[in-house]
Image (cartoon, rainbow, N blue to C red; front, side):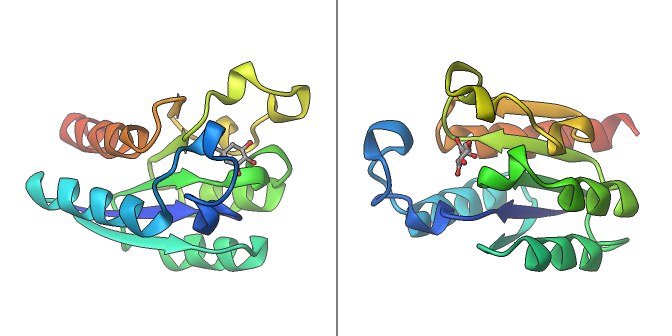
Length: 145
Ligand code: DQA
């Protein structure tokens, strides 16, 4: 099983940005954590991060027929990007949306999620563990298919 993990803008700034919200561990630590957990589960993961909307769209398009699942934290594009939503719909790969923070308890402008209109599950406020939960959701979904 192959899962594509996508992180959007500013997630490369983990450990520097708003530590009170996102914690003090950096992006490298997140990727090591995801890769280690995936290996234990016998799942292959590719981790991708970009600050550019179009680059994320292209990465999703490239995943067509190549991945069994997508775990995506679109960062701020969550709340704005119809293009990322459309790309996910186009490739039609089972997708879990993940947010490190409890977005539902934050500002009004964070209350809309375009990706959430396609994702079969949204995980918020669980920190780095949310990504692992996302991988587990994809594994569960693939078993039931
Ligand atoms: C985030 C929440 C978004 O609202 C924000 O723009 C981010 C990170 C999260 O992981 O909690 O960049 O997706």
